[in-house]
Every structure is written in C-alpha cells, then in structure tokens.
Length: 235
Length: 207
Ligand SMILES: Nc1ncnc2c1ncn2[C@@H]1O[C@H](COP(=O)(O)OP(=O)(O)O)[C@@H](O)[C@H]1O
Ligand SMILES: [Mg+2]
Image (cartoon, rainbow over all chains, first blue to last red; front, side):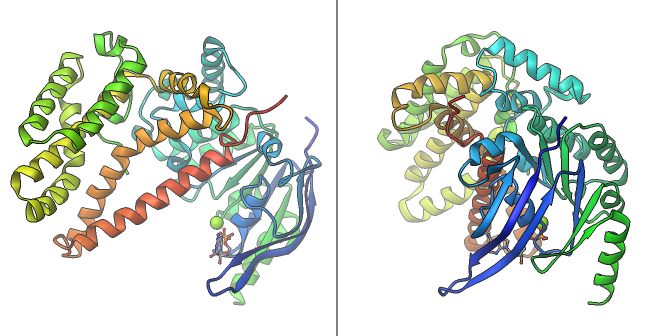
C-alpha cells in the first residue's frame, strides 16, 4: 500500500475565549509525514487531540492548511473522512448502535446499498477482527478491551488508508493494551496515535512531542520519549 | 452509562408485533406520544399503560426487560410526578407521568421488535420525499439515534441520583436536573462528533 502523505502547512487553531478574546491552542505547525506509524506524546492540554482532529477535518485550521494525500480537509472534508478513520478514547462514544454488528453495518451503508451484500461484508469485517462471536451482544455487555476492538472494527470497516487514534489505551488494562497493540501491528493502514503510554509511543517509526500547542521534537521514538521525559522533569 | 431494558438490543421473535410493518409501529409510537396532549383523565392513560404492557408481553418480550426499562425511567417519573402533584394535584400528575411512561414504553416496544437496520432502511424510505432539502440517510440516522437516546437520558438520571445521594443532595432538584442536562448535552456532542468523524453526516458522494 502506498503511504498517504499527511501535510500541515503553518496550521493554527484558535478558539474564542469569552469576551471577544481568542486563544491559539495549536500552532503554527508544519509537518509532512508518510511513515507507517506515527505517535504523538505530550502533557494533558498540550494540543495532541487538536493536532489529531485536524487530520480528518473534525477541527479545521484557523489559518494555514491541512491535507491528506493531497486533499484539503476543509474543501474536500468528506473525501478526507473517507480516507482517514478516527478512534476516540471511549469506545462507547463511538458505538452508536445497540450491537457491534449493527454498527459495522451502519459504517457500510454508503458503500453497500444491497442488504445481503452489506450483511456479508459486515460478517467478513467482524471475522477479520475475531469479533464475530461478540457481534450480536449489546455493546454495553462487552469488556473494555472488546469494546475498543469493536470500535476499531467499526471505523476500519470502510477500509480507510489512515487510522488516527486519540489515547486508545487510556481506559484499558495491561492485557487489553497488549491486545490493542497486537491488533494495531497487524494493520496495513498508516497509524497516527496519541498516547500517554510510553511503551506504546515507542512502538513507532516517528514520534512527535507536543508542548503548549507546538511540536517541540520530531524524530526517532526513543529520543522523543527521552525528550518528553526531560521536558516533564524540568517543568 | 447503561442502556437499560427494552432499548438495549432487538429481541428476536416472530410475534405479530415483530412482523408488523414499520410504518404501523411508528404511527403507533407517535399516537401514543400525542395522548399526553389529548387524554383528559388519568384513567385513560392508565388503561393505555395496561394495553401497552399486554402488547409487549403478548409479543413474547421478557417480563424482566419490560420492567427493567420502566424502572430505569423511575427517577425521572418520580421527579416529574412530585412536581406536578405539587402544582396541579394528584390526578393530573398521574395523567402526565403515566402518559410519559406510555410514550417511553411504546418507543421501547418499537426498538425491541425492530432490528435497527430495518428501522434505518424504513426511515430512509420514509424520508425520501424530503430529499430535495434533507439527506434521507441523515434524517434516518438522527431519528434512530434520538429513539436510542431516550433510555440513555433515563440512565443519566439514575446515575446522577446516586452521586447526588453520596453528597447528601438527593432532595435538591437542582442537584439532579443540572448534571443530567450537562451529561445529556455532553453525550449528544460526543455522539455527534463520533458520527461526523465517521463521515456519516457528510453529504452523499457523487462517485
Ligand atoms: N473547542 C475548544 N475550545 C476551547 N478550548 C479548547 C477547545 N479544544 C481544546 N481546547 C484547549 O486547547 C488545549 C489543547 O487541548 P487538547 O488538544 O485537547 O490537548 P490534549 O489532547 O493534549 O490533552 C487545552 O488547553 C484545551 O483546554
Ligand atoms: Mg486529548
């Protein structure tokens, strides 16, 4: 699979702060990336989520541009969202249908008009993720790890080229985090992942350290983690 | 947060209610919903409640689930009942509270006997005439999710009541209502955002 290039050019995100004031919560950030696995680390409130949300147009830049595979997240937002899937920390905010199967089918409504075809495609997705036996249970009855995998199956059903994950292991225990890691390792998609789990962060081709809305380090994961540690210890 | 009772998942079955066409069930839900406006006395609402329970049990839905779904709504009903009793007297309070329970139960009977996929397909078909102004898929999704959110709000009341009790504020309406509003708005935002992230609210593609 050709790697899709993610590109930010002088992107900033500014939010209103009450009485006609504004605050820049990210940027300006410039970045060009086409690695298979990119991780993002940084303190709470440093701007990780905002950076990730820029990548599929959930947040649009106040100035500058963001493109994915050459497509602009503002002008071609719908097209970008077909390429970039997004997984949230809490799978329950992602799963909107009563069961996993129905949620996977919801993902496939646009691509598969015919119901039998849609059902077959959903079954195939569920089997690929080893979730077929959980597909008809209420999502509330799944364990945290199972839910997170189900949420991944749901967003990956449409075969996006990029998967963005915002702190996917924050609610998981060690065993489930390991399961998540294994699943991520098996994906052919480009993976961009923000995390506080430094082991998970090191499992990458490139790591960004974000601090106060800026990328303050960009490079090899081991060095990035060391940089991040130093940053935390000196503040 | 839990999705209690009737709303959690579809209960497979072959009863007449399961087989009834979607438009009929939807019409039923809407009709039951409007009775809160035109029923004039509490016993009409009570009769309808008995009828709805009979329909649910007659359709082979497990008694436990029907009861559980009403219990989830309990705190909301108690709160509303107390308020209306105080302002309008007991018969009127009963009429209102039972009316709401009826609307909730009717929506629950619909979601329990209709697979979501059928519901979405049916709603999309129903929304086709509007397609010049609105994307039928988005209309269907919005309605489907609204139906599914009813028990979530009820669940939020239950949850908030527990934490209010922990702080000794169980009798303060403010301590109950405000957090529920906040929870609900946050839930709606998160759901909206998750749907947007999946591209489900984008206009249909031309390719
Ligand atoms: N929509 C918003 N409105 C106002 N402030 C926001 C908004 N989104 C994020 N922020 C603020 O921007 C900063 C960065 O947030 P975020 O990207 O969520 O950081 P992180 O994911 O690293 O914790 C935080 O201070 C946060 O409070
Ligand atoms: Mg964040």
